[in-house]
Each structure stands twice: as C-alpha cells, then as structure tokens.
Picture 1: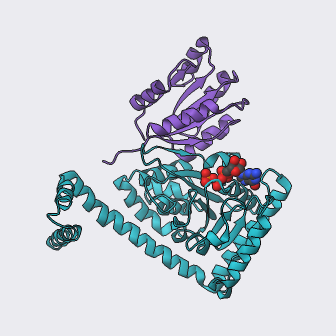
Picture 2: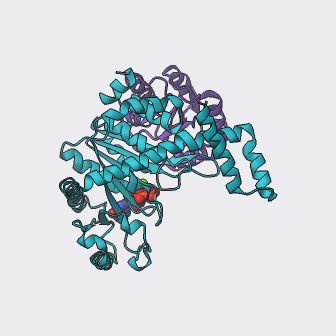
Picture 3: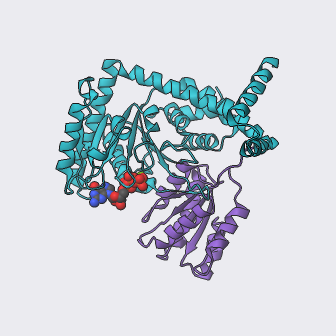
Length: 133
Length: 324
Ligand SMILES: Nc1nc2c(ncn2[C@@H]2O[C@H](COP(=O)(O)OP(=O)(O)OP(=O)(O)O)[C@@H](O)[C@H]2O)c(=O)[nH]1
Ligand SMILES: [Mg+2]
C-alpha cells in the first residue's frame, strides 16, 4: 500500500492580524514533510470548515491570539460535524489560558498548545495521533 | 452507478476531494474510480494561468472567479505549489488569495503539491481536472507553480493559457526564448501601473507581429491589468481579461481548434497512463526486489551500460506479457 502524505491546514480565526506565529508553524509543518494549506488571517469558522473539506485535510490547526478562541474553536468543530467531516481532527494554539482548556477539549478540540509548547512537540503530536484518511 | 461516482457527479465536494487525494497518494482503487468517472468528463472549459513566481497568478485567479460567478458559471480551481525536494512537505499558499469564495457552493478550490513533477504542475492534475469535470464545473482554472521558461506542461491540460508577465521583473522580451512565450493564448501584463508596462506592451506586440501566430487566426491579445489594490480599475481590467479568454474559447470552438487541443490532451493522457501502468510498476518492482541497486552498481563499475540494462528489463517484461 502506498504511503499517504499528511495534509494539514493552518488557519487563523478571528480579528487579530498577527500571523507570524501561524506562518512559522506552517513552515515547520512543511519541514516535517506535511502538505500545509495556509488560509491566512481573519477567517470565519465557516470559511475554515468549508476550506478544510475542499482541501481534504487530515487536521486543522487553529491559531488565535485575540482571546476569541472560546467561541471560535468549538464552532469550527461543530461546522465540520455538520458537513459530515467529523473525521477531520481540530487542534488549537495561541494565547489560551489554562482554565479554558477543559472547555475546548470538551468541545472536540483534540489538543491545545499553549505558548510554551515547542514546535517539535506539535509535530510529534500530529505524527503519533494522525492517521491520514 | 458506483455510489462514489454518483455523489461526485451530483457535486459532492467531500467525495470529490477525497478521490483527488486518492489519486495523489496513488491508491490503486482510484484508477478504477477514474475509469468509471471518465464517461462523465470532458465538458468543462479549462483555463491555465501561468507565469513567474509572485507575478500575481493567485490574485488574478481570485478575480477571474469573481467575474465568472457574475456570469453564473460554476468554477473549479486547481492551484499547484511546489513540494520541497528535501522534506517532501509543501506550503500550499495560493488559497489565501481566494478564501473569500470559500463558502460559495459554486466554487471549489483544491490545492495540489507538485510532489516531484517538473513541468510546473502535479502528476495528478489531469485526473483532478476530470473529477471537477464530472462535478459539472463550467470552468476549471489551473494555476501552475511560479515558472521559468520550460515548465510548460499546462499546455497539455488547458484549452486556453494565460501567461502573466510583470514589468520590471526581468521579463524583458529579448531575453525570452521559446517555451513560455509560445504557449500563451492570452498575455496579461499584470501590475501594469508600474513603470515599464507600456514598454513591455510595445515589445510584446512587436514580437507577436513577427511570430507565426499573427497569421494563425488567433493573435494572442495583450491585456493590461492594473493594481490589485485599486478595486474599481482592477475589476474592470479583470472583466476585460475574462472577455478575452471567452473570445478565445469561442474562436477554438468555431475554428475547429478545440478538437485539435482535445486530441493533444488525449495523447498526453495516454502517455501518463502508460507511465502509471507500465513504467512505474516496473521501476517499483525492481526497486523493491533490490535489483535496481544491483544494476546501478554494475553500471557504476562499467560492467554494463544503461541501454543493455534497459533492454534486458524490457525483454523480460514483454516475455512476461506473452506468457500471460
Ligand atoms: N502592488 C501590487 N501587488 C500585487 C498585485 N497583484 C498581486 N500583488 C501582490 O503580489 C504578491 C504575489 O501575489 P500572488 O497572487 O500570490 O502571486 P502568484 O503569482 O500566485 O505567486 P506564486 O503562486 O507564489 O508564484 C502578493 O503579495 C500580492 O498581494 C498588484 O496588482 N499590485
Ligand atoms: Mg499563487
């Protein structure tokens, strides 16, 4: 059986326009051998979910610095489910207070990376948790 | 009809994108699916957008989507970006410029990585086009990677090719050789508000007047497209570009050239299928058996030569076929 390439999407929901972190993450994923679709800033959950389905990614990485993650991250998961795409894993990162993590996990965000997390640990998480479709 | 095929023909994005994925990952079942899908393909008009890195291809594609949607056409986009030869990974960034259409059900944007292909596209692009054709897209736009002179495989897949040039980017006509300049059905001088645009236009027209294309029934028009950050003029310019491409489509239909292009496309598809069904299985089996390595050793030590090796392999293969 041929080996599949992992496809991921990096998206920035919400209003903050600082995408340096997201760009660094995208490059790091490329260097890990993934195909990375990058959608840029200011994305609505609707745009993100639609793009994830069109691109057939295995994973969506959400990055949010504005504090709106509590509403935006769960909404992406919900929309993917509505589209019959619950098998697309959603993870999140950015400036996220510890106390918000249980809420996000409950909502179906499979992993949450706070600013202290190293890029390697994120790649490692993907490699051990994502089995391409 | 196969359930997957039925869904794709009904426009199901998830099924379609998954099949494209299976094609990219060379899953054997994908070939069987394409066979079944094939009868439903071939009705879309395929536009190729090509040009140097950063010329504005994705921004123009986004604008074309906008124009075509105004005309109630459904649009598929295949946007190709390069795979890193070192890690096998890729950043697929074309989509950023087109995200405003993400929620439009009449638009389907799918990014592809080159995965080692050298012609400015991905090996999977032909079949990915077929998947979008089966979905019933009126127009399919294929954006190539940023190219130089020689990565011109787009000509084998598109009906109409727009070559995007930018003034002051070293795109001086004198330095332009065969290849890129010969595949254009429409030229775009993009970022035409910049210095040097008029000169580029003049040089281009001069070149086109001398070329054989001038007498061929279709002289590639040169369309000036100004600053993408000036919404009003940009919309007018890209509307003009859309019209020129539609004029070319009409010309292809009325002159009979469309059937010529479709014939060329069919030839390419046979070549590609032969590569998939003949060449790749042979190479794969030699690699897994370790024979490839042994042959390479022998050639390296001058115990044999590549032609003798190739003949031996070919003979073995044909004998195998006869026995079958
Ligand atoms: N000033 C100006 N910038 C433009 C224009 N069109 C595109 N750009 C910018 O040029 C850069 C590249 O644009 P893209 O549309 O991504 O170019 P591309 O040809 O698709 O690039 P690759 O796919 O990487 O080869 C972006 O930063 C755009 O914002 C324009 O008309 N004027
Ligand atoms: Mg591009």
